[in-house]
Image 1 (cartoon, rainbow, N blue to C red):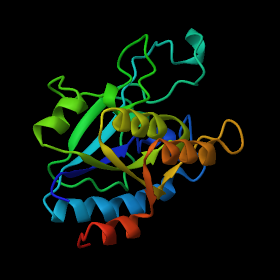
Image 2 (cartoon, one colour; image 1 turned 90 degrees about the vertical axis):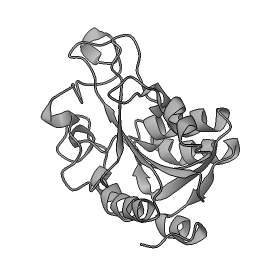
Image 3 (cartoon, rainbow, N blue to C red; image 1 turned 120 degrees about the horizontal axis):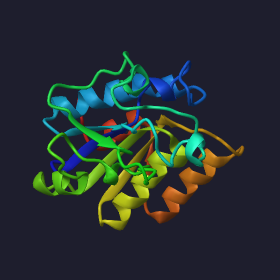
Length: 200
């Protein structure tokens, strides 16, 4: 367990109820994420959190030919973390989707304030296992999990701490199955806490 980290993906106002690209029930991931984040922090394990941090104009948005309404524009209220999310002191914050020509779905496209990419940050801490939760199951979570697996990391998906956009009905379940088939372990937060011997 000493080489594990928690990765929280895009729990931002625009992806939660009332936001410009709201995930149905997106805010239900917050309580389990708060529990697991506190457990990781108490065990001295690193916590990473990503945010979409888009420029005002990007090929990601419908106005420029992309698939999505405007959301999570850098420094906007919509790009802020949901106010109920409790990130531990020392959380490493990652910014993704900053390139006007890239969607930036994966956390591995994200970098900290110094420009250091997630892959390097994990290597610096000798992390070889990620527990992952956040938004959205069928896009940024899926991309991040698959990218982690292709980099040789082991991955646990926190099934009660993810929620999907569901552009097509069943997208979330299909994405969870894709992640499982690729090698990810699917556990609830409570199962993960017990499996790793973490204290809450």
